[in-house]
Image (cartoon, rainbow, N blue to C red):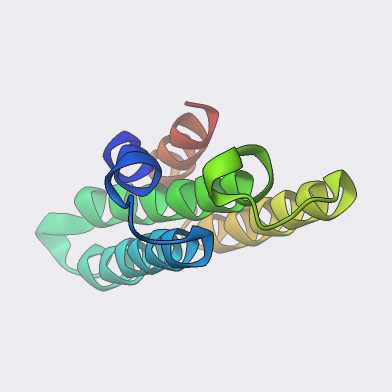
Length: 114
């Protein structure tokens, strides 16, 4: 999560805000989908749930960055920025609730908080 944040914020000097946001969402969604695939395997359940939580945290951070970080600001309205964060939060809660996993829930909320 922290690595992706730094990756989006500092290493892409030649990409505009849209490129940075798209790459951030791609990494978050890829982590989420890979976690969903890995979680089904018996020995990798905890690892998969951690990836799911991390994927949601990355998606949340990228959505947060679209309004609050100057280098990637695409949303200028505080209302729209807050609404976007609310939508991501609700989607993540409903998705993680499906797993009934304290690990996935705790990992997602911990990374979102960080």
